[in-house]
Length: 155
Ligand SMILES: CC(C)(COP(=O)(O)OP(=O)(O)OC[C@H]1O[C@@H](n2cnc3c(N)ncnc32)[C@H](O)[C@@H]1OP(=O)(O)O)[C@@H](O)C(=O)NCCC(=O)NCCS
Image 1 (cartoon, rainbow, N blue to C red):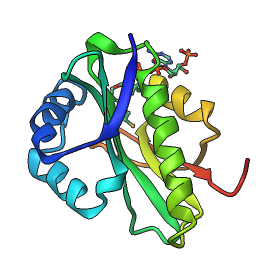
Image 2 (image 1 turned 60 degrees about the vertical axis):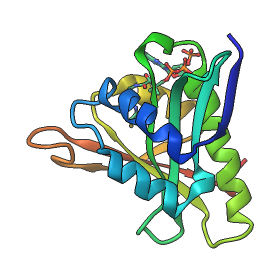
Image 3 (image 1 turned 180 degrees about the vertical axis):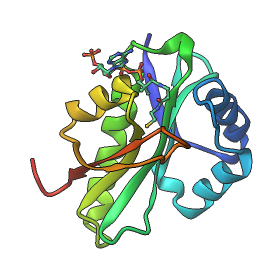
């Protein structure tokens, strides 16, 4: 399987929403993806493998936390997981964040992940993300989140 990563277009957003819906209990709505695409088009990337069908996406967005960009969402269609797609998407997002850090005042990438989501946490740790704080009830009652960050100036 040869994985390709490219910019998301408005026409891709239906497929992005479909991947989102099969990946999360409380999925983002279409209109939010539209907003992410409008706000930082360069940060919204999609993955394909040999066909035009999308198999994953990753959204790097602006953050209200000073000096930070966010990974607002990353997901791979369940059929295509554990084949290195998530790894490639995150690697690509970090590369773009480093490029942006030369142009705008950002020095780190932040993200929130559910406490029990060990698959995603393991992926983030591979790239040097570190847990910085626990966010109680972030995903609803008794569903804590963890904020993880990668400092772009390191490594
Ligand atoms: C997290 C996610 C994006 C990973 O995508 P993926 O394409 O399956 O990941 P990869 O095949 O590139 O794996 C890269 C690394 O991630 C970690 N990982 C991925 N799936 C894992 C699993 N089921 N259990 C433990 N670690 C896992 C491993 O460290 C893996 O490295 P390894 O293959 O050397 O063990 C995918 O599981 C997903 O879409 N999950 C649902 C959405 C989600 O939770 N997104 C994150 C929100 S914060």
